[in-house]
Length: 142
Image (tube, rainbow, N blue to C red; front, side, top):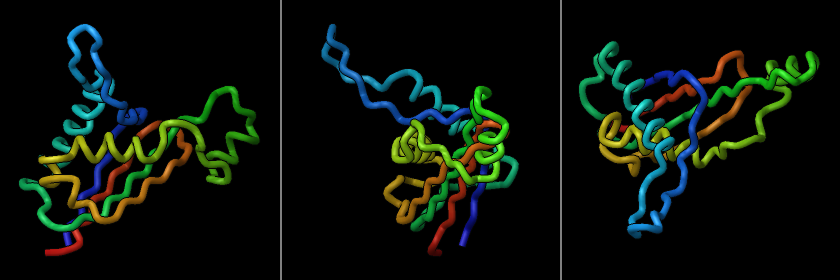
């Protein structure tokens, strides 16, 4: 069993739907999605160099994604404490499925051959001091 854990600092960017350019009829991926996926690749690659992860995972994978979102400054002290302690969890956008799509698609061909290898997926959202995404990939076989 192989375990790979890494952090993506900053606010999460959900995968956006492809758009249609009405002038030329071509479908394209919105720039914020391209930028975020490149950033995820860079973050993973940085950890991979440090940890010696020299090749992609080859077997079935369990993926866990924890998203830490900033607490609005306008919240009361009581509400901020409830959010910090986990009594109040984020029920705001982005949606968990779009978060998973942006992170897992970015890791295709880098952390693993293809995201079809993901056989278990857990996405959780919390409030935190600073926004970031924590990714854990567990190779289940091999």
